[in-house]
Length: 518
Image 1: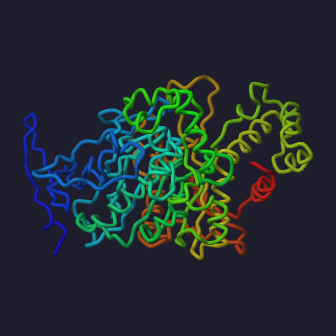
Image 2: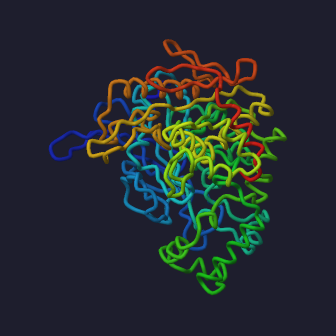
Image 3: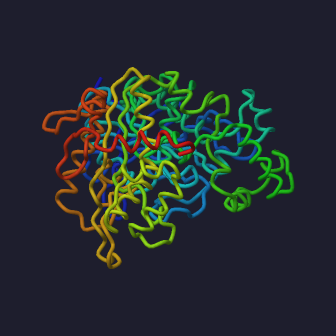
């Protein structure tokens, strides 16, 4: 049976123009999605993958969807999870924040090249406190045209996704507390396993991929015993729970923070009393506290060990991994802390920060001029923020994962906007690769160049090839070798002149690996 026979196309009228919709019967009920204007993509948005986590279900593991009768519209993005306005670069096209947020979206080619498509499940970033699947830069229609089925989901974040508390552990049935946002991601993957064949996807060929906190989530899902077998490949873009950025918290510490939150914000209110509080009130109280109060923890259920322990033991999913980061993840301002970016200040701050290791640091991050000092400081801050944690993930999985590993560096600076401030410098900044992966350069009003569009085609091909076979290589693409010691730990540099080269900065990461708490 061809895939097209599973669907019924329904013509409609809107302001005199014909609009095509598409219906599909699932185990939970009938969905009505949309067909793109060019007729090449079918999209279903706002599909519930778990019951609304409201009322008594606040701070509980996701519960099954209640089937519906009739036809459920699936043409608009669902509400994003409760969050504050934290990151200025995030633009949402949804109905606003809501506790009722456990929905996913699905894009697939209208004329699939095969009966069972490779599936790519995207997890958005945002530090576990912000973000949503409705950002235009994450629209997966163009990516799906490369012969894959793409799924994205919203998940609980901040206080609603990661509050830990002794009372929650007691009622959980697993002696676990926190990590509701990660359990949401798990529930979305379980939905994919059960339902994706209905949409023409292959439940046994699933790649989970994400950026920043989404990449950290991928790292966590690989380590979770509950997620084993739900996906066969993984892609991480800038982030892992190794190092000091978005680290895992011990459950006891997380629960102590949860108790402090209940005490300081609500006078020691019980969990039942906190569940009765309006969501907006709980959010506003949480936003007054540091972000680490509500972040992933080693809960004993979703995660039974911290990252280094789980991966060192080879307890993670032993699957192919493709991961890397961007050239300009950090900013030299973070290093200088308001001081002038001069060589003298650079050396003095290096001495303060690294003490007896300062000389070794300066040999690995050298600077003879003020310009070089800015670049070296920026390199260090990028390594601290995302480079080192992602490198450590790759290194440990290479040793214990028993599967191919591929590493990249995204080197393409984004073009500056026309109204850029004088002296602004183009950067391959954190999250700058997203538009290239999804083929959505149009989502940003920048003076894109032909080489940007060419690179987007290259990157999206590598990603979809990897999803298809576990190997990013394909006809007409520059060769991307596996990450291994015998070839000098090659890195694929993604730029207008792409190519692989031995890691020239390995000494930096080995040095940082010896610094306690880095």
